[in-house]
Length: 237
Image 1 (cartoon, rainbow, N blue to C red):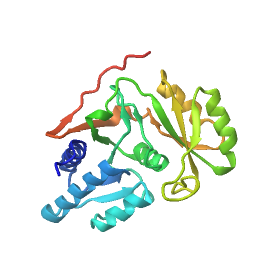
Image 2 (cartoon, helix red, strand yellow):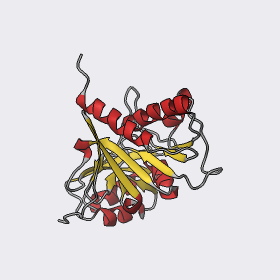
Image 3 (cartoon, rainbow, N blue to C red):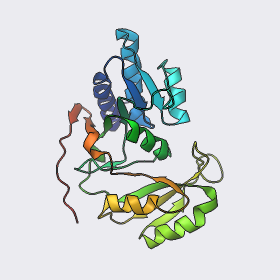
Image 4 (tube, one colour):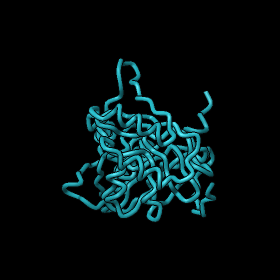
């Protein structure tokens, strides 16, 4: 069977990010398949080169994977300012504003992103878009899910509670909340929509990441390698 080009792109992006890690760093470890490839390459560097790092996992899944790879772990309590957060994204616009949250770890990912000195986003080139659109995940406390969904409709979205796979009922986050996936035909003002959604009572966070573009670098993987993406102005609608 020939290797999947998209999977090879993820591997190449993860490898490039692992090469950028320096000895002694504290790293935020994102959640998802692309970040897992980074962790595999990072574990290889730890084993072969003896670099010393500590990782802050953004989900239980990432914690389990890191332990299986023998990556040392820490917490934000002990290391409140990680040197670098490495994570994936579902969409990346030219100004490095992001949509994230397909793995339902968006709140912890945003906490780590805010705390970190720098951010590296790793993704296949297909995740690069001219404008953000589509589904924005929103983490909501169960008590507030109905009024939040009505409010999201007033903001122009079509919300639905994310259902679990191979289980009945909704997806439950590591924080004990629901994920409401809200589809938007277009997002002309991502920072404004992020502020409106996160201001709703009962919303913990949303998957729009617009506040951290200045400290973000993007690595776009391809089947034959990886490139560092150059930030450019966003063409507003």
